[in-house]
Each structure stands twice: as structure tokens, then as C-alpha cells.
Image 1 (cartoon, rainbow, N blue to C red):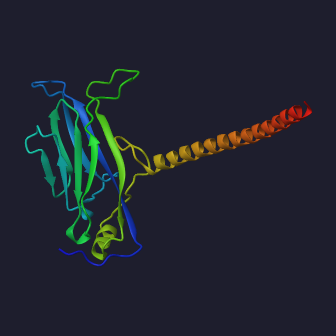
Image 2 (image 1 turned 180 degrees about the vertical axis):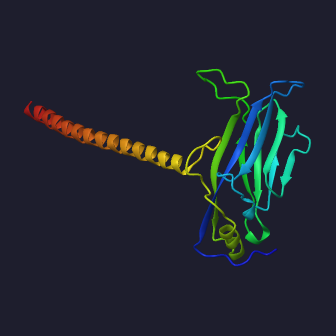
Length: 217
């Protein structure tokens, strides 16, 4: 289908969350050590299928049918294994959108972070989540209608809860941390600038004194 007329100057963003959840297998009948699920979904677990045509997950070549395709949610693959590898999540948009597919890359994470103060509890999941935003610049009129009419409810939760680690609250806290860091860097810069100016004045005085001594010889 040929894409329709594009809307000049219009930009729409849609938040997404992707990554994987893994759990150690307590009963190992094979050499597989973990059960894991790789996924793509809305940050608030909301339906995102209204602007997605299909999703492909590219697994390691050793898996049977390592290219898994989903034309409807949930967009996720559950498997078992023992090794970590790169997963490619390819998102396709409706033909009327005129948008090219987007590929996301992340390493499948099975094991908990190193250097933990306490041993990782048996059966506790390892979460490897990523937040991103799909930016649609000058969408077609038909795709614009899909993007604006299909949304329902908050796209990003207000607070962190359970496995949901991304929220408007955490985003605001991160902005405050960044503002504080910028303020500290600015203060340090101004301090170094002032010290540099003082040092330049001292150097100029020393040069004048040296010149005077040499002239007096």
C-alpha cells in the first residue's frame, strides 16, 4: 500500500519497554540452567498493537526456528537455555504508515549482577528492562489517526511498582539528579575559571617583576 500524505511539522513519540526476564531452573533435567522471556510491550503494560504491524525476535542460531514472528500481542518469546547472547527485536509498522522497520538490540541477561552483598535468592527473577521512545516525524495522515485514536490510558505509570521500574516519578527524580549534577559541574567550572584568572594575574605580576630585575642589571 502506498503511503499517504505526510503531516508537515508533526512529531509523535510512543514509549515502549523491551528486554527480558530470566529465572534459574531449580530442577535441571538438561544442561539448560534458566527459563527466560524476551518481550516488547508498553511501559504501563498497555496495548501497543494499534500502531504495530508485527514484531520479529531474532534468537541465537542454535534455536529451532530462531526467527519468531508475532502479528498480535503479547509480543514475547519464552525459552530455556544456559547462555547469554544478543537478541534483535525488529518492529514493523502498518503499510499505510510509510515507516521503515526499527531494530532494537540487547543482550539476553540470565545471571544477577556481580558484586552483590547478599547471595541472589533462589527463584528470584533477573530483570533486564530497557525504556525507549519511538519517534514518528511527519507521519502520514492515516498513521497519525492510528497513533492518536488507538491510545488509551496513561502510557507511562505514575509510580514504580512490582516489575515496573519506569515511571513519571522516576523520570522526574532522574531530571532532578541531572539538574543537580549540571549545577555542580557549573560551580566547579566557575571555581576553576576564577582560580585560573587569579593565577594569570599572579603570572603577569611575576613576569613584570622578572622583567624589572633583568632591566636593573
